[in-house]
Image (cartoon, rainbow, N blue to C red; front, side, top):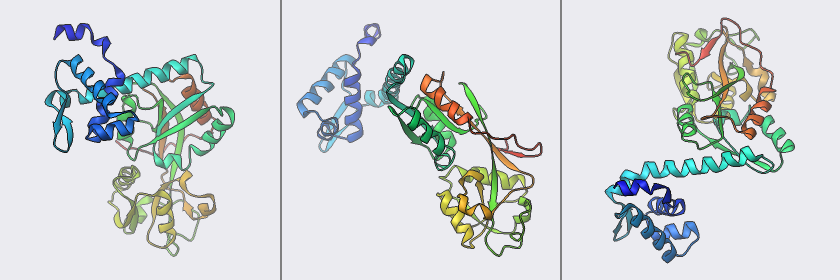
Length: 312
């Protein structure tokens, strides 16, 4: 076994990727099709990898293959190795310059719909040879875990309570409430206390939508648990459901379409979240340039009495 570790630098990433592809596809035939190589060539790569590890990594079944016990033990490390190799290649390209390439950004769907639209438009105009690839995660925790593994150059989301890498503050965004027509509080433009809406049936977000936890936290801070009228995973749909008379909805202000802004009411006290860009170890030159575009968006600091989400 010590001899194996003495020669660990000889592991072939191409063979490792081939093996993972076969594991994911469940058969050598399907793996060869996905990799666009012949089945004999793929089988040769698999045998070479098994020779390196000194044991079989795949168990051949009647209808496909599955990892052997050793293969299962190696899966997580193998995936992490390929992610790290991709990250190193991307970082080397970034350090050399970014006249061409791909900037990979992890973020939340809520922010794609609003916060990122203008910066992406500017990026495309200023760096037309550097494409942006978005990785969208429904939950902030999922996004942070994947970025820690190196799946993207940077992540843009709510400022994390704990993060070991670099963090750049991007500013604050206030939440507003959209009231259904005919609601007793819908007649004025005065700020609404969230507690005044405790007895309403609400348009809520599906638990798979990250906003669900933030809405629950905001209402809990106001002393109540919102009663559900309907739930959805789509922010724009939630706004339209509120305007259709289903019930009030809490939504980040930038996610309210301009033509519907008249229906949005500020809150008293204000409810806000802080947006931030994070990365694993250091911002690459393209990532740093994109962060500067985001910081160009002027966001005033929230009032001193604002409730900051998450609240704990």
